[in-house]
Image (cartoon, helix red, strand yellow):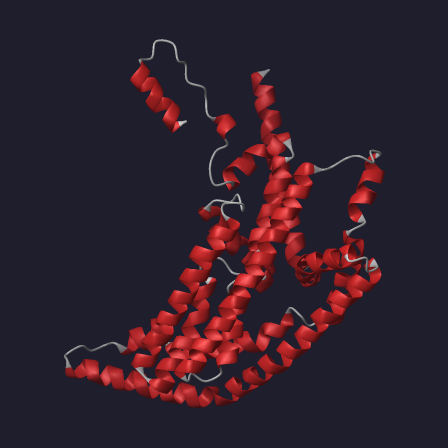
Length: 367
């Protein structure tokens, strides 16, 4: 009997693993469609609070959704025009920066040679290769609009999602046949996702503006471009802010020298520390419910599966997966693994019998 149960569990595990592989391959094949949909959901989450606020002001839901979408279109047009002009100018000036950078690297190599240090060309051009960093930055900036190539379809999807935002709970109650159903867990989950996206957007916006102001003061070329890049990559957890700083600091080194590069680095570090580690932590607390390792692994997984959009939305996607696992008894253990710590109810009780008072007090403090 035991062997039969073990065999059934093994078959079930293999079936689940095969299903996951098929789902992952399917997601990868439908990447373009899913990316457009996820971008639309992202804009819809950001636009839901203004729509609900307008509805509370007794503005019809259709008018409120159209006003919010019109505001998004206006912002996208303004940002696209300004950032697009900066991208084109940077791409035009890129050969000049590459030539100047090669000259500075060669001068640095010659300086090391006078000090008896040779063979640095392989390190500088093979492993570090700052010229390749500038080229990669240009390619990244030119390809920023690929995720928004279907912008008309995305905005239409956003409009329809916003129109359904206030009616969805009513429809769900009608389907379940309980008009008084409150859905506390689902409501809390949606609130956490919305809270994360709104706070992250405001923090990213503040990061981009401060970086733009600081680089403008230093006199670095294309400060608007680097501010926009800091805003965009601030959504990427753990490594996004560092990646955003590299091309701007490198350009400051090429254009103004090592002193300005150090000042630019200090500005990036100060802005990211204050906004991400102080303000964002206080606003969000530990509401994400994800461990640090899971956040990093989700960045790699969703980024490889969905590209840059997956890296930006890795935390909301992982939070959604964790919520789905929490509400299924067979997968609750996955939710526990994804969380920052084991839930209190999983800790085995401690018998108080035969325990001296001092030891008992210490155990109760730990628990």
